[in-house]
Length: 366
Image (cartoon, rainbow, N blue to C red; front, side, top):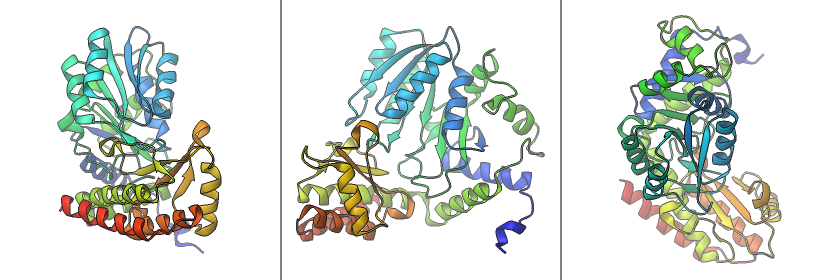
């Protein structure tokens, strides 16, 4: 019999300790709520808690999740201003400042830190400063960036920061978390349309759990997922967060360097400064199907962390994930070797370029 079938019930103290570990990971002293579901749960809960008829939201769209946030905001009755940029680039603080100046009523801003689906990342520190100066709340989707990039929630002034464990953290997908600033709690509490007595209610968690001293869990927790999240946080703490971040940066830099030598496929995000460390996306030429290339790579090595792009990008984008333990030099080399084989190209030069880039990135982070 599996030992996991005989576990004692997860205690409130253990649950609270995991929340405290998440807070440390996010560099925040704000309340942290670990939600019992995939990260779309706290993302939707944050939007439905803060947005309402009469509010105006700036929705920054740099990938598919920004499009989803806009739909939720409109469903809440908010007036939505979309700031969209090409999916192969990043938004700038200047563009955000211009949008805020053109629409002074904006009181809520939604932003994705890193888009794993498109491989880009946004300069949150600069954008957050502009948003805070305007006086709006900032909700940040950091699901793909946490543990792959610096995430300084309090120092940057992020009011609602949502993470999931399944990407760079290398943990479970079934639990997620959100940090909530004092300003955000005030906004949600004052919103008559905010969910109450609902699975989407952050206020329920605050009233029945956080404000009640975190002594009695209000719901039966997802025990195995919570234990997996705790183990994942322990692993990151043991390695050191800077080391984990450096590993993801090195994996992305090495993959991009090797691919540029292979030449047939090219980085989907051309500017290195706009590229996310959690996943490297590649553009395939018109005569090469990304879905077919992904299938061939997985035939050569079923363990490779590759997949075609989603939706309309399935034919033209190949995604190389650097999630958790996949952010390793061995995985990068295996991926480039398989790419060379699938493309009919000797990968030796690409591997040399990748090794050089890995060493340079590791040295820069030391």
